[in-house]
Length: 177
Image (cartoon, rainbow, N blue to C red; front, top):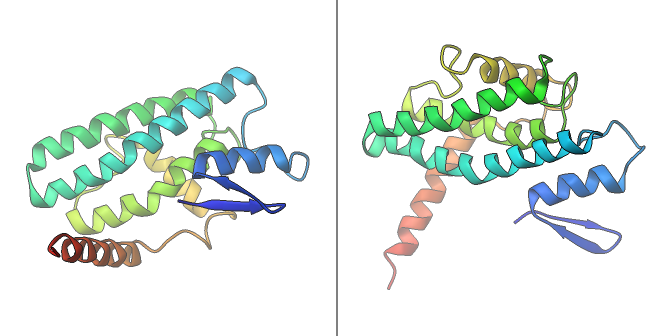
């Protein structure tokens, strides 16, 4: 669980930390969350959706190797289709969910892009496919090329290695009495 220590006090959970940083350091740079209360609520909704749904999507992608590929592809397409539509509404025709620059929802969804790229390496199938999710695919390219992201985005090959090591460790622990 990620924890931010600020002023000797802990702030826990990724989504809460990003919102806290936006509020605690207001005026120190551009806002992360939208100014409009309704837009803020919409972005928070989709962030919660992503945080709840995308880990399941990643596990489903693993099912493309181990199990029913057609069913796994259908589940992934449904979840990403929802986010494709969310991008259309939230971005209001601009480059990022937040509009002209990276914001809260971009940060939340952007944290999964490396894992999507890793899943593509493992499955041999595109996740953010230009034919099925053209807006999300273009957004992901812009997000990864952004100055704030370019040098800190995770390497998909290293994520695959980490995932395999984690899977092996979990299997080893499960076999212990």
